Image (cartoon, rainbow, N blue to C red; front, side, top):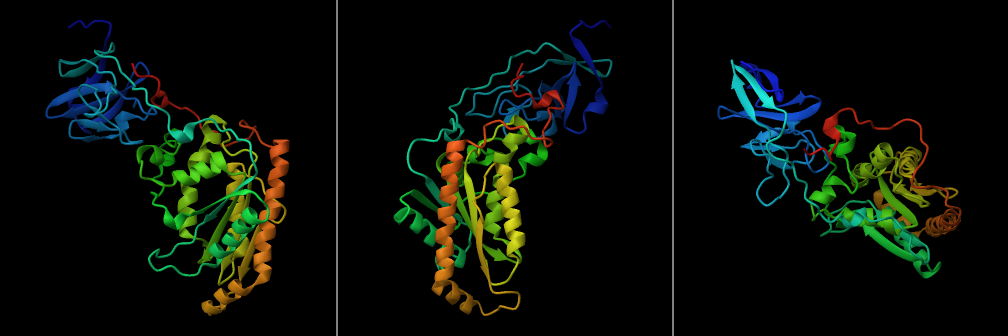
Length: 372
């Protein structure tokens, strides 16, 4: 048998039936090859969304589910699921002498719909006006039965002082009031699967962490993050938030793009027991990786020591302490003064020379524009 020059031998038929979905390379191009109901299908293995490897996904009926963000394409036609216009190229297959061949020229061309950009994706531009301070409270509680939170109350003192005495614009965000999903580890699949804006925020319009992204990236000059200490660490809500901040740091890794520029971060840390310095060290390290700078003495803290189990006394101490309230006020003052300095000096830029931690495109299945 003589085949045309455009036919490529994929191998013995029986060896290609299991698993039902796989990625094969044809002249360096990734193909999603599937087998179901005694029929093979072949489509281009590059998702039109951000280039996920379709051949490494899974089958849901007759649809291939992209492993990165779960977009679906028909395994035979390459068309997206009903209601979506995107399409990946379809390829002709034939069996000769119990071997499977693919025509390297696609039957149909792929199509990527043009969608309006997410509001968070707009150009980052600091508008004219006074310094802007956002407080982020990470304490967690039953909102129907609220309790006194020492970290939250000191943050309120700082924000109120900034607004009423220092004449700056302020915003207070309580994570406990927001409904947002935990990070789903897209970065673990590929650095390029973790996108800006966050993949979850783009896919789920009900995800309210967009308020935090908006404040940190586009609005604030100063952020003050307040956390209680829980078993020697920051609160679970704090960690839930910062895991979702990987999309901000990851832009440096994959695009050498710094989203946080000329912004100041400081912290309020309280707990009935100790571990202030460890919690502060983690917070300083993480927010420095995002691009924030810090004022002198960038955090205030309060604990009563390892053997302090009389928590009602701890609450009373914080509520009545002028020293802690004055500390919160001076923390925001120092932060604002530092913000005035960095905003004039422009200490950071969108691009930065940073050794290491640079993601690499290793294969063509991470090239989202290759849709033919």
